[in-house]
Amino acid sequence: MADLGRGRSACTTRFERFFTLGSGIEHIHSRSLPGVIIKVFLYPGVRLDAVAAAQLGDLAMADLRHMPPGTLPPLILKSGASALPVVLVTVSGNGFSQSQLHDKADYNVRNWLATVLGASVPPSFGGQYRQIMAYVNREALQGAAST
Image (cartoon, rainbow, N blue to C red):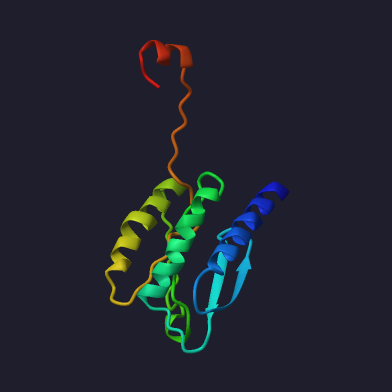
């Protein structure tokens, strides 16, 4: 578990250092917990408009290749008094597996909420992702001219 925490900390540290290349940044605050949060505070008078958000997104994407495999690009959300969360959606249901509930939340509920004017819908948290694990015979695969 210590290695996982060290990995999250390494990710936040790299992103924090890379975000300092942006303009108008007063300070940066982060938490290296599951669902890592990096808050970028701008100087008064600097607006977080499409240009500033795109600049932070570009910086994050440029640094993503240095992250561990499977690291997802950050989701940039505006924060402030007018952007406080007003709804928390919980998905549950009898007879559904955790994977099915996660799929419903990600592909149905999020898509529906995204059509609400002014809504910012981050990825769902919790549940289980669909996974398929396959064991292959490498020699047989190479013999079939496949890789």
